[in-house]
Image 1 (cartoon, rainbow, N blue to C red):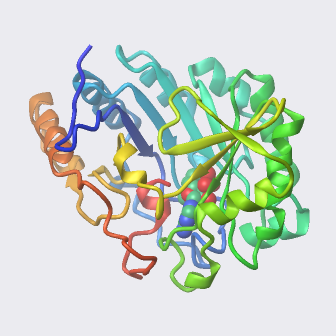
Image 2: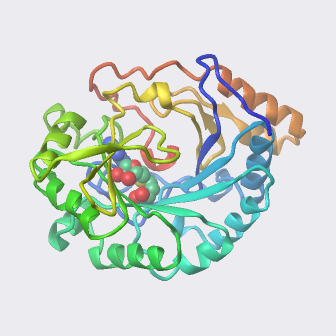
Length: 328
Ligand code: SAM
């Protein structure tokens, strides 16, 4: 099997693919209330184009694919894409990041198509607050989605929470306790200065160490090794079936573990979430480029992958592309 390393010796074996820029929610920290200007349909990669890129990526060493968005479950017939990717030799893991609103009715079909795992973004367990944060989301639909994913064998379900001071940080302990009830992963992700520029302020940011201290106020946690843990550091309460992860994009040397590339919904390859540098695959694909040329562009993206992101502090550049288009 091929393996590709970047200039920092990181093995690049993971690609996140944003299949659509639109979302059915408008989370206050991610998008402005009106949403972001949607791309024209013709600018979005077709499923055939995505599958071709995935096949070429697999040929040089990508083994894991995560589908994201926008909200991936609002794109029609996503199972078709999952099935096409599952047939690619060398891809051994297909996962999905979703807000879970539509997951309840789709989990079984997605699992049948070849999806292995799912991450559900959930920032509150309280119905009113969930509706406010997401500007209209239904907590019961998200919880049904999690239950349906667990029933369908999309295992382990990872619940991703972004604690934001004054918004939902009083629920950190409640989220951590979910790992006592079942074998799921609850992961706390540091709030990053990207997305809705009007919402960000430095005082809302909570470093992972502080989040971890709040979790430890419930009971002692012990470090655990989780297979394919990527950038998360994992812990568990003694005898708990689930684990608690901390993802620290702004602290704790996240970059040295970064094994990924991102493909935007409009066909740009991004070596780093925090850098504006992109390599345009769509133009090459639509100009009739052979696989060897797409592969060359891929290798170039890996070659220019930065050692570490440029966010030394927590300053927001309001020009950053919306998270929904890059693929969170
Ligand atoms: N719609 C899908 C979902 O909700 O999971 C996929 C796209 S969403 C942009 C992916 C993830 O990005 C979500 O878990 C969300 O919490 C996270 N996200 C968006 N803006 C963020 C920010 N400023 N800091 C940290 N995480 C952020």
